[in-house]
Image 1 (spheres, rainbow, N blue to C red):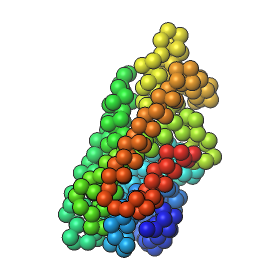
Image 2 (cartoon, helix red, strand yellow):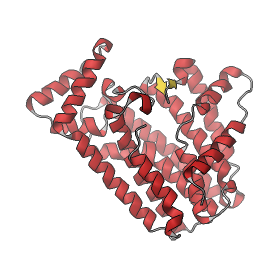
Image 3 (cartoon, rainbow, N blue to C red):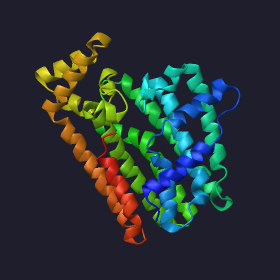
Image 4 (spheres, one colour):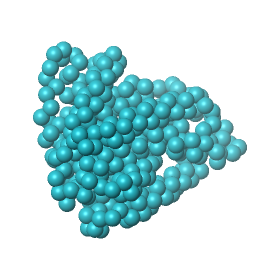
Length: 325
C-alpha cells in the first residue's frame, strides 16, 4: 500500500505536467494559478487510495483522480465569487487577482477539462464512473443552491444544513472513493462501503471547517477567520445558536446579524464568538463531528480487505478530524 504522502506526490507531479500555458492567456493562466496553490489534494488521493486497496497499480485511476481534482478547483472559483471571498489557501482568489468574468470563464473551462480527464477512465469502468460523476456534479450544484437559499431564510434546521453539506462537500469524497474502488476491481458492496465512508468523513470534514472558520488560526487556516460570521452564513454553529439563544442572548445575536458595517467587523466576530461560547455550540458541533467520524470508521472496518491495508485511510480520516487548516 502506498502512503498518503506518496499518493499526493504522484498527483502533484501529474498536475504539474498539465500544460495551461496556452492562448488566450487570460483564460488559461488563472487555471494554472489556482492549481499551483496546492491544497490538500484529498479527492484525487482518495481515488488512488481506494484503488490501491484492491490493486497494486494505481495508474489506471490517475486520470479520473486528476479530473476530480480539477473539478473540485473549478467549484472553488465559482464559490469564491458567490461568497465574495478574497483569500484562498493564503493567496488572492482568482476573481480578486483578475475579475469575476475571468473566474467564471476559467472555471467553465476547468469543468470541461475535468470531463476530458475522466473520459480517459479505462473503458470497462467508464460508463459507471461517468454516470456517478455526472450525478455528483449535479448534487454539488444542488448543495450550493441550498446554501444560497439558506442565506435568505431566517431559520434553518440542523438536519437541513447537514443535507446541504452532504451534497455540497461529502458526495464528491464518496464519488472519489467509489470510482477508485471500481477501477481497482472492488465488488459493489465494498465500493458502496467506501462511498459511505466518504459521505461520513465529508460531513465531519465540513463541520470541522465551520469550527476552524471561528476558532482556527488565520495563518494555518489560510483564510480570514470569522468570514462566515461577517456574512451571516448559516453554519452548524449559527443554526444552533439561533435555536438555543433566549432573552438577551437572542437579542444580541439578532442585533449583530443586522450589522454589515465593515468598520465593526472585528467587534462582530468577537461578539458572535462570545455568544457561541456562552451557548455551548462549539461542543455541539464537535459532538456531531465525532458521530460522523465514528460512522466513517465503522464503514471502513466492514470492507473486505486486510486491516493493515486500511491503515492509510484510517490515518487520513484522523488527520482530517484533527486538522488545523
